[in-house]
Length: 249
Image (cartoon, rainbow, N blue to C red; front, side):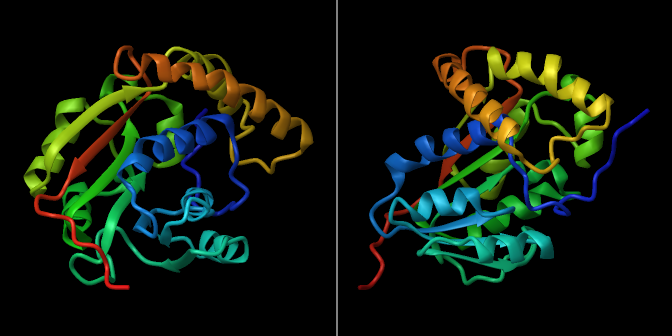
């Protein structure tokens, strides 16, 4: 019996080792491209963990998220430099060139028209700015977790690269992540939990937090294999053509 789809965004207490590993991947990939005070848009900000991590590094982060529950939770837990509002990836309520960096972690696979969303990322990004997305890898890997999460698709690397280039991005790179330990965890732990209907969005207690910390440490070893193994996810990094212009003081 299927465990989904879940009503995405209904439980702001969303913690887990895979989520933590992905946030770590995003931050360490994006950080070299961010100047002090960089304006960052976090599309699909969820409970605000990524926005807070970037704000703690000195960025000015705007998180946009369609879920009322998540927006309320994120606002209540926001660090200085992070703000949150409700909105959709396909219609970003910001002027052209408003941000130095845009991030969409595990967002595109939920959207009926992912091309519209990627073009919106390009529009609100300043010339010379960087865009980063993560998505689940490979249609052949579709399983119960995709049904539970309400995914519309998984992506082949070339498909994600084409989305970026069609929107006008340059210097596009796409690589796999989440191998070998995260992929093993997904198959041997995560999917059996879903089958027993103990979804990964269950509230986090002390034992769960300890397990998350231990597994997150193990998953850091996966970075040694980024781009070199059959990981469960893809990361796309691309730049808007043009010279970056420092914001006015």
